[in-house]
Length: 451
Ligand SMILES: C[S@@+](CC[C@H](N)C(=O)[O-])C[C@H]1O[C@@H](n2cnc3c(N)ncnc32)[C@H](O)[C@@H]1O
Image 1: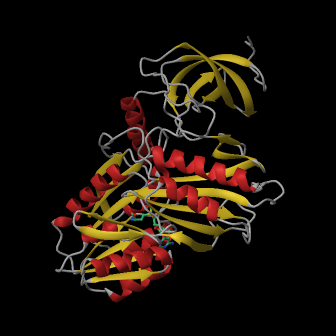
Image 2 (image 1 turned 60 degrees about the horizontal axis):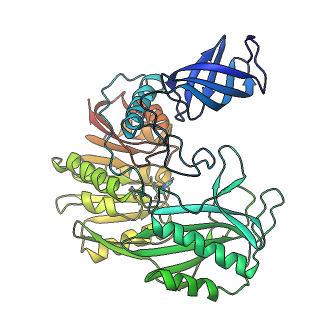
C-alpha cells in the first residue's frame, strides 16, 4: 500500500468517494490529488490502482470496494466493466436517476450560470430498451468478434447478449458472426485501415429489422447465406450495405445500398403513420420517446403562433405531434433520407401546412426566420450532442419566438446554449429523461418563455 503524496502509475491507494463525475465515475481525493475511479459510488471507500497522473488529477481503476454504498447492486451483465457500454449498472436505478438529475443541475449551474429547479428524472424500463445497435467488427478471418469497444480503447469485447437490447439484437449478432466466419471475411483493422467489414448496425421497430453491414470499399462476396440466415429468424427485414472507406471513426459512409427485403420500417403511433430508413435518425428508446414527444406536444398545445419552426426534425414523428391547421410548420433536417421519410409521413397523414426543409439549420433557419419577419413564432429544437451553438442562439435572440422548447441529449452543450438564450428567455421547466439507462447519458427537455 502506498502512503506517499506523489502518485505514479501502479500505486495502490485507498480513496473515499464523495461525488460522481460527469461520466458517472466516482470522485475522491488523495492528498492533493483529485482521483477519478470508474464504477465506484458516492460514500464508498475503495482500493484502486493508479493508471494515469496529470498534475493533481489521477485516473485509477477499481480493485476492491472496502466499504460499499447501500446504493450498490450486483450488475446483471457478464460484460459489465469490460465493454465500454454501461457505466452505472452497479448503482440502483433510483441512484442512477438521481445522478442524472444532479448532472443536469450541476451543468446548468457551472456552465450555464443558471440556478433553476431541475425536475426528478422520468424513466421507464432499465433493460432491453434499445431499438438500435451499432457494433464494430474485429478479430480475424474465421474468428470475428462483434461487440463493444473496451472503455477508452479500440479493442473490441465480443458481446453475445447485451442487456440493453432485446433478443433481436443478440440474434442479429449471432447471425452476422456465423455468416462472416463461414465466408472467411476479414474484419477491418483500424491500425492499418485494411480488411473488409467495419461495423454491423441494426434497428428493430414494430417487429421489423433493418440491418446494415458497413464495408471498407466494394463488397464482392455473396450475401445470399446472410439473407438466408436472416430470413430464418426475422419475418420482416431489410439488408443494406454501407460503404465507408474513410480513415476516421465515423461509422457510416455516404453510400448505402439496399440489398434485399424491406427498404424502410413502417409504423403507426398515436394515429400517425411513419417510416424510417436506415440512415435516418430515430430515438433509441421507444418508451421514453413516446413520453417525451407527448410532453413537447403539451408545451406547444396552448400556443397560437403564425408559424412553428422545428429544427433538427429527423423523420418527422415529433413534427406530426406539433403540426396544426391553425399555423404553418417548418421542419428543418439535414439528412436527405430522413427528409424523404418526413415527406412520406406528411403525405401518408394528409398534413397540409407542413414544409419539410432539407438543409443545414445554420443556413436554413436564418432564411426561414427572414421569411417570417413580423409573424409570431414558436420553436422546437432537438440538436445532436454539439447543441445549437452561438450563432443559432444569437439568431433566436434577435428574432425571438414567444416560446422555445429545447430537447437536448447533452446537458453540457445545453447549459452553454442556455447561458446565451437566458438573456432573452426565462427557463420555465427543466425535465430530464432517462433515455439511456445504465449509461451516463441523459436527455433533457427545457421550456423557455420570452421575457
Ligand atoms: C437528436 S436528432 C433529433 C431528431 C428528431 N427530433 C427525433 O426526435 O427523431 C438530431 C437530428 O438533427 C439532424 N441534424 C444534425 N445536424 C444538423 C444540421 N446542421 N442541420 C439540420 N439537421 C441536422 C440529424 O440528422 C438528426 O436527425
